[in-house]
Image 1 (cartoon, rainbow, N blue to C red):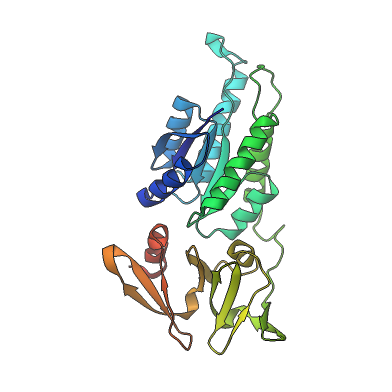
Image 2 (image 1 turned 90 degrees about the vertical axis):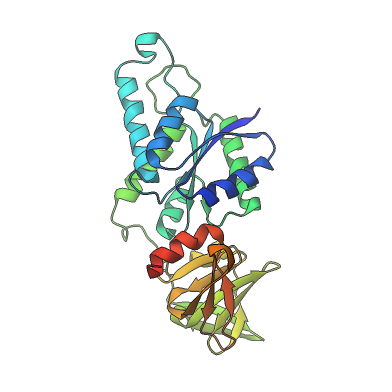
Length: 288
């Protein structure tokens, strides 16, 4: 059975990239796209999709506000009685996959509450994994059956738990990030301060850590795993293959077609591309 899907993101390039990736996934039908939170609520209520890819950072009504508004409207429908004035069942909330560029705390909250997430820039294998998780949740009864009971669905329970967690003080349940990371350089395991790291790059599954004085390898398997150990206030995934320490950016270099490259302050003055979907974040960081 095809999974009807909405894409909500205020960046057109991000929507196009995700649509391109989803078109290659079997049994996924992208039925609509929206550019902001208001459109998200309207499209969800109009199209009743199975799945929504929802951007977290949007002007006006952000991703969290969209969820709160949907939850409020579902409560109002239930207070009026299942079936309402027209005898129809209360519509199920869609499965939600969040998209975020840099909010590491929210990423951990999503994972804990079994609501999936994607980090920008999007990776096809990760998109496929997210769809597979949604497909499995739907097959296992993750969506309401339309019985009209007043019991809360698993999806609603998960979203409620997520919203409660996000409202709590950010330091309350957060595991402190290590001040230093272990980096393997030749046969030595070095403890490296995060402040010394210029950038990290992944190539054929191996993560390379570059400081101003030396290079080594991380034991992490993915950049997502590495990011969970890094301070989100200083480290940014500028490209699918690179995580940079914004304190070690030496120069922002304009590139072709309104794109940019970052020249780092390591010995080689490495130039790192900024992906199309991260250009907006770059402008926010440096007021370009």
